[in-house]
Length: 387
Image (cartoon, rainbow, N blue to C red):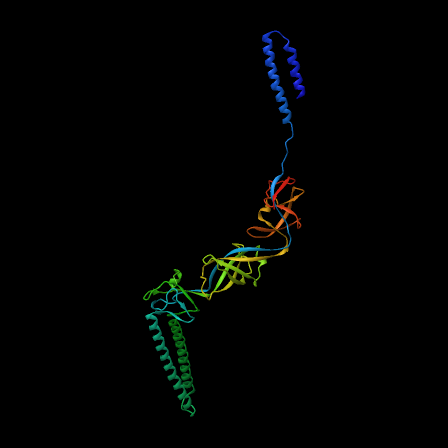
């Protein structure tokens, strides 16, 4: 800047002595131009100062603490009846009496429906008469054989051939009588199908018929049962566990659950049954819990949120899900070392909605970036804004 000023001064000194007015005007104009250039020289010297390069990137961080992780996991479930049966008519018949309706609670063995089938009554009466006829015939032929046998004890009165024929006739009549007995019992069993009784204690949840309706085995193919009976004093809570959680559950575990229809109520159940295999379609294992429902607060088909506390079987570090970066090439976290980013490859374990357990070259006390992305490259200067 000083050099530029001296140049301006001597130029002005040289030409100021000139007498020509025109030249003086030109010189004065040049002086003004040089002054502007001098000012620009000064400004350009200020602009040459180096600006900061790659300022630290503001990040959020968390400090690792070790120990076994218990991951709370919420799994959707559904309440279903402990027993559920659809009742159909075995034979073509008419509904004679209907003793229950939907919502009725019934006891095991209680008569629900009486059916009427005149043809079956006729078959039963005919089978009974046929059986009695065969019995009478058998008794007559057997009595004849007994008489011949007693008479044959007197030599020369009855030939052995007549005695054998009488025995054969009695044996044949006996077989006919036994066959008629079997036919009669079969007809009597069919008559039992005309009375439908409750197979267990439960609640009638569906009725599709009224007295006088024609029913038969064809109703089953059309999917229309006469009645639906559900056991509701005890329910089954069913859920499907993804395969990564199956090894953490035990059949003796206790779980809590809530139902969306009863906010504020919490229920407890014990794992009763585990399928022991993975469904190839859903890649899940079915788990069932028995739920006491003697107070009838819960209803079948209610949806439930099952709260599991999954216990990890290995040591690791629980970190926020946002601290884990999963790319096509690798899975890593970003550790802060001397205020710079260092990528550390990890393997993930248990996870839930907010946290995930990782294992890798990490130790308690390490600081990780919680808002990690692939854009934060190795060696990037970092400034921690909050922990």
